[in-house]
Image (cartoon, rainbow, N blue to C red; front, side, top):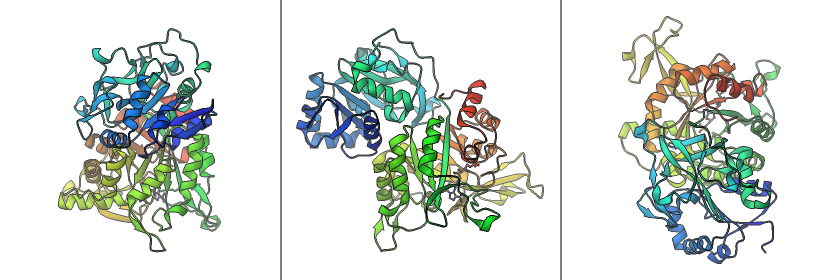
Length: 536
Ligand code: 1PR
């Protein structure tokens, strides 16, 4: 039954709405799921977190009668909050796999970002919004960074100006939120935007606590902030418990003390701590993901469930995303594995070894089979949900002609004075080198539908001597999807140096945060001081 504290949630089963549910519960409300169109009409407040692609969402909504109920509900001006695709679907039509007709409540067309403007698409990360209409629901977020992840957007124009309540800049100006009466929708993800996102949700759920309208500050001009990501390498220790570990050049065992696996803490606790410390994202990498245990037993699933109850920034999970058959002979497709992780609270999955095989096959034949994990998962969940994790190792050579892979002239010559290097991709956590370079792999996986590249470097991992700037520049210049630079951070200057010299979108680090050498906030204040936009 519907009570004061009930929020009705329209989940049509396309992805991770666990986080929205968790955020609503965290604020002290109950969630009731829509099962049939009447549930929409009976709602006292309706939250519609759209996930997936425009065309497939409209197909489902039209097919089960939800589209009509939604339009009626909105026409009656009943409390409504759309999130991400939940904003886009309100417009006339969408270009994603289309054109496809939307709900048509607001004039305007949802089009793709134009990457010829020199921007990376998808738009992933923290951007501040410009408030253009004085709305109570937005009162907490003026001048704050909120989290976006999308490739399509609506351009504000005369036809929709009485709806648009805030805009954001990325290449061009796009609609960040709309409001009219009780109807609200946001392009960003309040459930993933930390405390300020939660305050927007609270303003919607309980307007009596929302600050009364006042002249809202007109947000400062904002570019996409550079992200700082905390990474947790997770594996079972020798007793079978999941622990956060950290290697040196991927070797996670102590060099003394019986060569035990290094134990740096519990994954859920550390994720919570890094969220509170200001991490823009948290990544979990199951570094023993090449083992074949039944899907339901994957301990990482519990880690995600618990973490997503208290971490309100994006969560990525990697390790073992591939087709496999478990020890009992049950077969799982990579899509099933990913689906289980999304249901458990992951926003993105990160694919390592399997991406290397897929890229090798694609480069050999030039054919996209549609069957690789990258293609399958990005088709269903969108490419913003698919990260490819690259584990390259530096190989020195005397001349670029020695290999068929992209090599660079390096400023740090090899042990025998070699002037060139190429970056060999590896699988199984660096155990096996493959005949493909990081450059070739990155371009191939972008073609196959990856939305982001997590660029590690085995030589730099755990060394604290700085990022491999040459590698990061090589890859960031080669692709137009965001690149996350990883491996080697040891000081705050390493972060600013990397961002000043490359166009990477984010920096990921593990060791310095685990060893409590440098807090996340110090990294961010240093970056801000250097004139690099970050979310603080
Ligand atoms: O191949 O799809 O099962 O994925 C396995 C995943 O696990 C890959 O993303 C791979 O990078 C990761 N992985 C596998 N073995 C290890 C290992 O350490 N033995 N960890 C491993 C990779 C590297 C980074 C690390 C940064 C920053 N860890 O994630 O966190 O290098 O470290 P630093 O700041 O301390 O230098 P699949």
